[in-house]
Length: 125
Image (tube, rainbow, N blue to C red; front, side, top):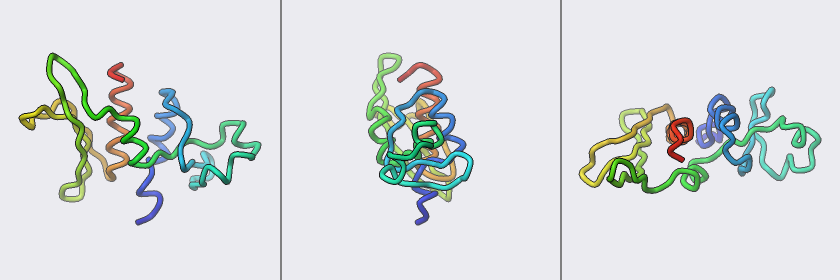
């Protein structure tokens, strides 16, 4: 699997940065060059200090960002993500399996990114 499919897209990474998510990740997009570098390659770079690099979160990093359980409207909703017929989903559902919030994308990590963006924009997290 390509690294580009294991990290959030550059477009969504920019939105996450704009929404002030933590700016720490294992991988980073080089903003103007459209390529991915590791954290250790950029820590001493002048460009690092100039905000040239944007965190390229992995699915595992989103597991740390997204809450496992959301309590809303006197109910608990549980996080799940899956892939079905070529589409990736990230959703919160109650104990009966009824959806509360659902986001979909081309990859699981992008679906999780869309969920994080939605939760932040709606002041849920």
